[in-house]
Image (tube, rainbow, N blue to C red; front, side, top):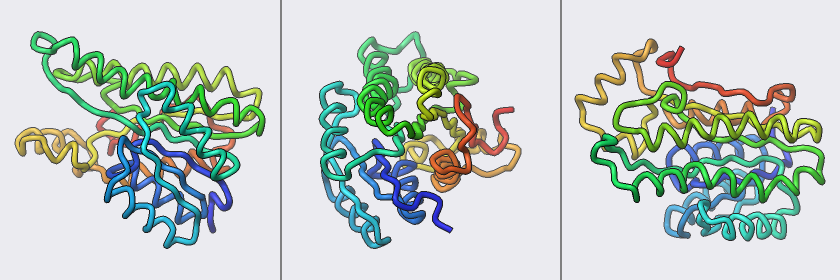
Length: 248
């Protein structure tokens, strides 16, 4: 059973990691996939080919999600190429971790811009399309640290907490138009970003997880599939933690 047959999804930050897994999951369930990253490169081309091999239409775009004008242009390009947007996944994000004592202003500003402002940019750009359609699912990638906080990540935690508040507000604004907005809060997920952590820190994180394993990008993609599909038709304004129980 293909849960997204014929739908069109736009996913930001999809060249690798969680975004790539979501793109492949959606395509496997029949969705046509538009995806973006800062640059069109070998990763973009490879993913484009992998998606098309699943029998759907796919196209990669070079776009800076943190730029308001880039977001507007991206949505316009996707509409021109695909005709509609049924699903938006705001996945673009970065980290610039440091204790507040040592954090420089530029690292605060950049994380807020890339992680939080990008969600504003793309949601604002796509809402006019979804309002006309009177349907749509917006999925914003938050984090368990946006719920609980984390030492050395005040900028990242603030951006991810902001995404939760934003998602709940948009759910209230657009619900009357049958547009849903939810957030996913991944925990410790095995990606290129977490692979850079020292082994001691990685072990400490895993020991704090009741399921005693890190999550995979596919674990997050399964939640994103549910929220994009009609199975979650009566779910909006919610935060789904994909964390193996580390956040309760």
